[in-house]
Length: 132
Image (cartoon, rainbow, N blue to C red):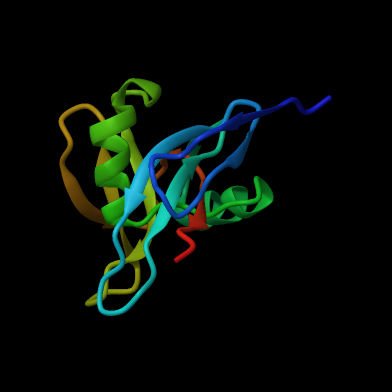
């Protein structure tokens, strides 16, 4: 049975938001270039030793997506202890060379781009819009 917990998110524009069992609130991502602000939720579970496409597919199966580079920075800042000290895939491809995607190291905080065929860890996130 999936247990739910009601929490109050730290914003005046949303009174309450439901987190599913095991989900963790990571913080708010401020929109850029007219994009809306949103809350970032870390979905429970992870996979190890998977290439980028397998990581993308796995995240979708969890009901989420791989985090962006900005989101990985927030996760490193607020929830680092919930990650292994390893490389984790982001959902962002390297713009100048499509066989590569960005990764985040959750030991030291480095971000880099690596070949999508490499095998790393992955976590999924979901986003909840901040209602104006």
